[in-house]
Length: 201
Image 1 (cartoon, rainbow, N blue to C red):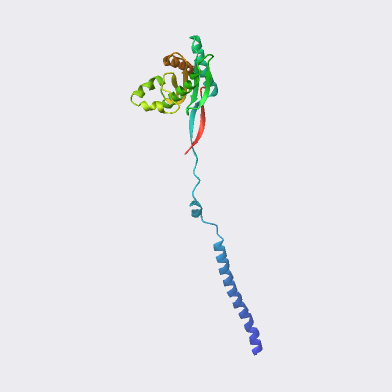
Image 2 (image 1 turned 45 degrees about the vertical axis):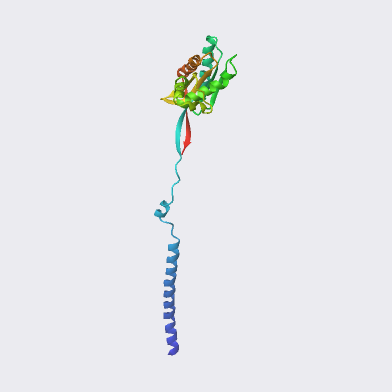
């Protein structure tokens, strides 16, 4: 009888052990599955987004237009028997074109560029800027500037985009007349301005 009882109890013990193992296994799988879950959408959205680059658009004279302006000034001077140099600079004061007329004085080359730079920097004809020296004489000490008549700004919607400077005539007023001849050539050009994207902070 005892031998039979042992046979009878053995399956019960096996069943109870199997049930216990099943419970332990289920707990283990639950732990593993919980640790293997992907991060929630909230955690993913917490990551900082990459900042978007900001840009701005600037206006510039095309190379053809700047060349037309530079050619027009000496041509107007030649009709009056004057020998001048003309310079065209962009909004940042960088030289686009410089033409030294036949027989123009050596000093006219640098002076024309400085007048163009001064006109675009202050968005005003240099003949008007000479009056400012009375109240602010230190303006003439700014490198690259020349407060003498002969420079005119080129504007687009009242914003300076270039400068034209002429030097070499007997007076600054005559230089400015020839610079305005270059300005007139720009207004007559069909495609005077180009847009350039520029990255900004």
